[in-house]
Length: 116
Image 1: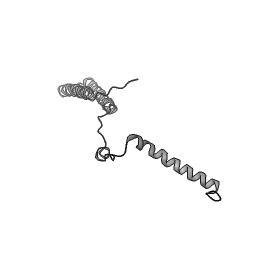
Image 2: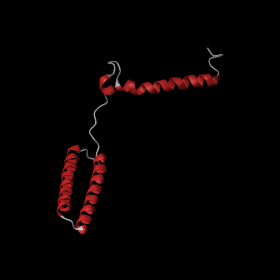
Image 3: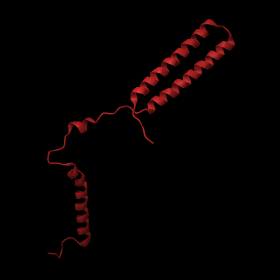
Image 4: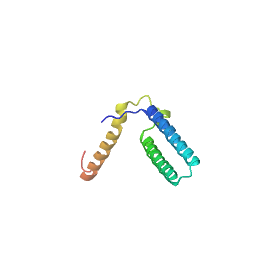
């Protein structure tokens, strides 16, 4: 499954949906202002409730879309020394672990006693 990172269309989609929901609420409000019929008021309330639920779901969907990321400031501000290559940087933890393992093995064997 591939993911596409397209934040611009998602923002446009959210804005278009928000405009439609606001237009639906405005229409419902106009019906509410012009009518005293309890059935019409009930329908308007149901419609407003549905619009609110759609808006809540749209907010959740908008939060799912990942925002564009920038590089952390520490990674940009701290360049590596000129003598350090990516290979050396990758091997440094391995070398430290090997040295630690060698010392632990010497300790288990009794150190360097009796050996030249």
